Length: 118
Image (cartoon, rainbow, N blue to C red; front, side, top):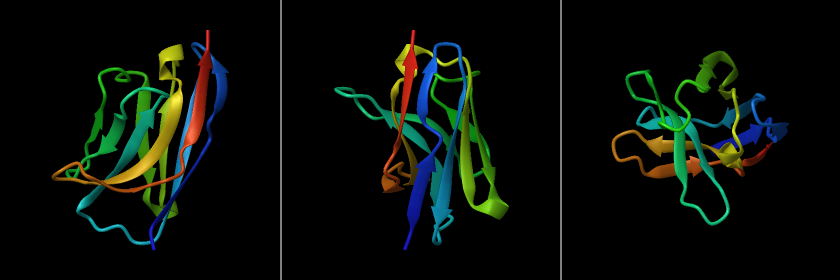
């Protein structure tokens, strides 16, 4: 059974940093790509970062140059380093496994809240 467990959220002032972690339990087929998405109240879900099937990372334009996605395969853990945070980054962040080809969401965690104050 697959389970994704996020941690590391919190409240930070604008310009600050946070690192989110996602522990991956269970076996995820290679056809799934791991990444993060976020959702703020009243807004659409937004893909933040993903590890593509070729191993490269992709980022939303809104976070490029500020967020870094990495993976520790030995620990089955995914990380999202978030620097230069802005109030508009405030959202609930979810670790997710999506079908690499279609982008369809397969698994997600419960999420962790990130609040950036100005």
